[in-house]
Image 1 (cartoon, rainbow, N blue to C red):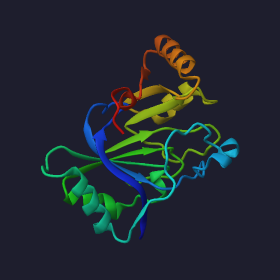
Image 2: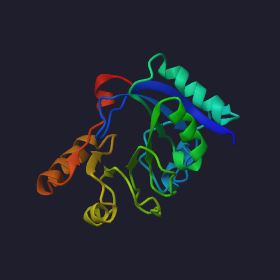
Image 3: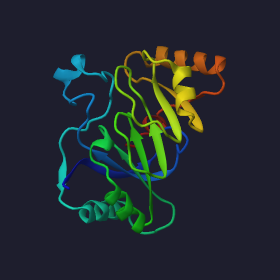
Image 4: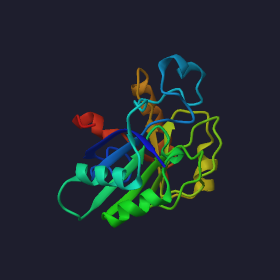
Length: 204
């Protein structure tokens, strides 16, 4: 399989349960809910994505991509984390790549919209989108970009994740969206607020 990867970079996880941890992000190109082009945003299922995922480098083999990820991490084999994101990583992520990275001492984490059932990994962050099918029904954390036309309590009970987060959608309505998240969490304390801390501290 040839993998198309927009970017590979080492940073701090900025969101959810693992916020603050060092990790290599492998951002796959492509998504099944938006082309990534502004001219298509209005007609997309997911209209609020704030991530660039169009184009990138081709990796012709599992080993080539796994080695590139390990090179970005650098020296030291302890506490290695790779976060597969996109776009939608489920379009390309496979068992062979996860196994290759495990041999290189990486724990694999995935951030997914849940439209594609994933191979087993160490940590799944599930972020469903309104209007999209939901096929990945197991996750370690549920992270909802808010507000959306989603039934939060139905999702909470259906997924049964150990941790459930509301994350305000970025953009011109960020202040109002943050207030809406805070209000909901205060009334439903089984949810937690997730903020994009990497943007506050100025890392990718």
